[in-house]
Length: 171
Image 1 (cartoon, rainbow, N blue to C red):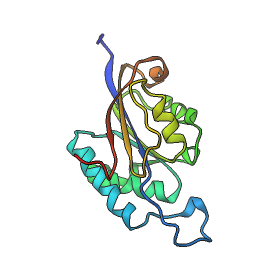
Image 2 (image 1 turned 180 degrees about the vertical axis):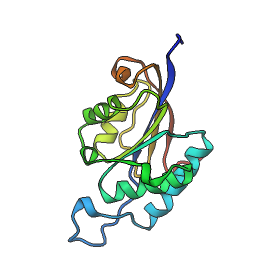
Image 3 (image 1 turned 90 degrees about the horizontal axis):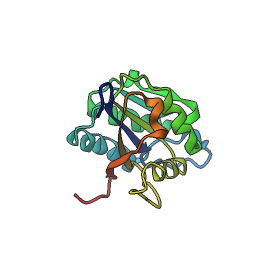
């Protein structure tokens, strides 16, 4: 590692399980269901135990994503009011993740991004030829590390997936 380069971590989280109880509710407004309300803090605890400490959490503005981000942030000691909400992460194309990553301040070492499928699965499968998943489950987490000085180097550097966690994964 040369001077000025640093290990950076991008933590991609699919929102926790959402409720379909109210059929008339717009997709954007669906809240977490009981399982989602249980799984999101559990995943936050797992991330904390794995040493994941973000300087920045970014979330889709959809209700279930915001709720997931808040529950995870609570477990990590990150202020809920500091979560950056971005409309463009709602059911976005995989390229949007890179666009968001390029806008991160270089002083940030670890970022958590909470969003939706199918974009998340497509994006994480593009991170490393060593990682592949047919479907990132709800509240699934993929952590990729890379060495770079700037976040805008993201697409030019080799990334390694170092963590793949999800609620039903057995330790």
